[in-house]
Length: 318
Length: 318
Image (tube, rainbow over all chains, first blue to last red; front, side, top):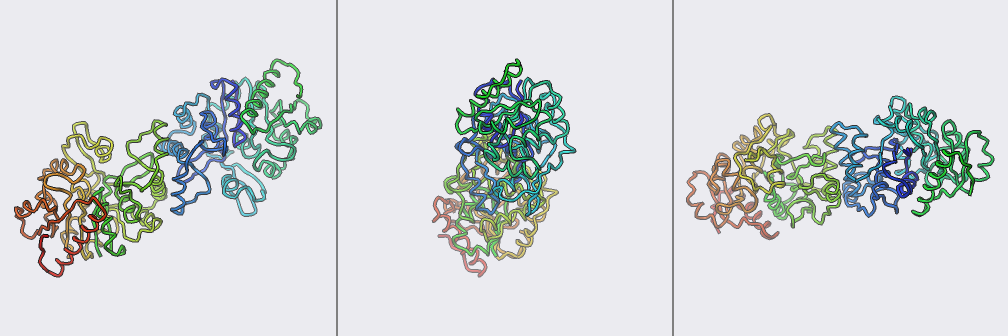
């Protein structure tokens, strides 16, 4: 069983590769819900959606989020009604939000609703929210504290960031199945997601980090950085705000207590040799996923690497 | 001030004519909400929508409901998710349901929400729900008791009807402004709506029928029948189920205690002469609204007739 911690567009891209090279029944995703928001009165869970759409083959590769070929007529009408439109919801995407919101209003948990949506979309992998409690990523900026979507989508992550917190995390519990999946995993992979706002909320849920430390499975993390910059998005600014070096050294610091292998970009080979962390192996490969071939190759490399680690063969950089 | 009691597609058609020939600020609509339903977890009020869309110039004339030129991509996606799709909601129409549902969830009343939606759509006429309490039209058939939409839309009004009731009506109160509008009206018009399930629920709200009886305004009712058949829809079957003759005699019976003028189809002239109800005048004209010209002409005729009545001039059939 392969357990993947994921969130964001980088995570969804990696998942697209992973589904090409593995048996979907072997995959369990533990997904960030810190970005979830109420939008137009509906409960929207962008990372659960991206992973589910990616696994269903519905993810828009053009946009990296939402449903491929989606239309935006409802959004347009909302704009004409002077309703907010900065968070783009397509007409087909809306169907999922309607279904999820209705099932939640009926008293189902986010885990149950996610399972139901996966069933409806024919997704056979296991998709688990990190928690059924509300954990909200809050970004403190000079203009005030923002929700993640306000910071990221509404304001195009242009604000300087003072700090990030995960409201509700200390009282949250891991969703059913999360701890068990990590403990019984064959391998655990941290997708190339933003370590602060995609993986960070998952690790902030009490018990998950300890489970990652204690699992007998090998844990690999894929870097979302090339050198000192994120492949996309605000990972750099957010890492700096959390006092982390914006480099694979920062990732090593963030994940060092539980990660066995760090998969970094080829351009970080020098940084890798300078990383003085006993017990952490760094493997360099191409982590930039522009094409489906890139995605598939990265997924294959990561799996081969983890399989090799298990059989204790040497890792060689390409 | 012209007060119009309305519901259904006949009502919306008449309203389309009315807006052509009157100053919109002079119009107050008291609208049936007995057809309202929860759909995809949203609160949908078909008659409020039809009147609002008609007044905004957005009503689809092709379908007689919903927004003209609307698309149905979300509906299609809902179908692919095995969600019910028998009640057709367009992508633009959905925006109104989202806005209404969100405002209701915030604790606003249906009256307040309707005012807000009218403002957003630039509708200057006053649109009032009959009540802010939930009154549900329930249709008893051999297959069981159905909601109005189940009977009408889902099952194409093919079931025999034993009876109709308005659940919640006895505990309901007229919405703010309804009684005052009727009392202070210059004229009151009952649109050519189904007397049982469009006008019936309005009259079932305690206080409204009494206000119609007591208002000093002339009250006119437009027949939705030609001979012994409804112009469209199940009015005939429903009238029969309520023990009313399916003819203008049935309308006279249903509305006789408060209506001054009945506007009937030209083909009902003979029936009109046979109607032995002192105090009720019948005027025959073309009530079938196939074109905008038909709609406008009917509205103009009704208004002229009411104005004539007020100045006590004789009514002559054309």
